[in-house]
Length: 353
View 1: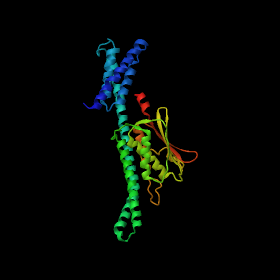
View 2 (view 1 turned 45 degrees about the vertical axis):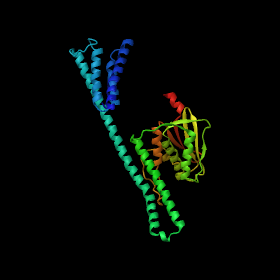
View 3 (view 1 turned 45 degrees about the horizontal axis):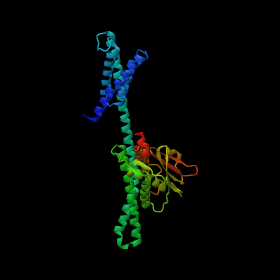
C-alpha cells in the first residue's frame, strides 16, 4: 500500500476518534449537551483539510455519523436507525459533512491550479531572464574565439591572452549561472534531499574565502567569527553557495563599494551570518521582492553588460528555507546593505530533538 494512502487512512480514523473522545469527556464532566454534532463536523473538516481528494472526507463523514448514532443516540452504545429522529439526525449530519468535505476538496483543487499557474509564470519569466543573461557572454565567447581562429597568425601574444582571458571569465560566469539555476530548480521541485553533516564554522568560512578569492582575487573581505568552537548541521556545499552568491552580488551590484565584510555570531541557539557592504544599497521597491522565485527583465543595460537578474538571491532563499532558516536584507543608514541569514546551531538542534 502506498505510503501516502496509509497516512491518509490513519488521519481519517484518528481525527474522528480523538474528536469523539473529546465529545464524551465534555458531556460527562461538563454536563454540556448537543456539542457532539458540531465537534464531529469539525473532525470531518480537519480530515478534509489534511487529506487528498474526496474519499477520505466522505469516509470521515460516515464514521462520524456512525459514532454519533452509537454513542449519543438512544439506545446508547448500539446502532439503531429505526427511530425517525435518529434517521433524520444521521441524514442531516451526513449531508453537512459531505458538503464540507466536497467544498474543502474543491478549495484544495483550486489552490493547486493557482500554484501550477504561478509555477508556469515563474518558468516563463525565468526562461526570459536566462535567455537575456546568457546572450551577452555567449556572444562575447563566440566573437573572441572567432577572432582568434580567423586571425591567429596576425594577433600578438598579448592580444590572444586578452581574448582567451575574456572567454574564461565569461565561461566561469555562465557556469555559476547554470549552478544557480540547477540548484533552485532541484530544491523547489523537492528533488534534493539535504545532506546534513556537522560542519565546523571556521572550516566553512575558510572554504568560502578560498573559492571566492579565486573568482575575485582583488576583492578584500573582512571576516569576523566567534573564537569558540561552533558546529552547524548543514549541507555544506549549498550553504557555501549561499555565502558566495551574496558576496558576488555585492561585487557585481554594490556600486561605489569599498568595504565588504562577513560576520558570524550566535544568538539564542541560532548562528547568524551577516554579509555587509558600503555600496549604493538596494532600491526600496526591490527590497520586498528581492528573494522571490520569479524574475522580470527590467532596465536592461544598453551596453549589454552581464546582469544576473537576482537569480542567485532566489537560490539563496530556497537553500536557507530548505535548512529551516530565515534570510533577510536591509539597507544601512550609513550606506550599503546587510544580508542576514540564520541556521540552527548543533547544540540547539539536539535540545529540540
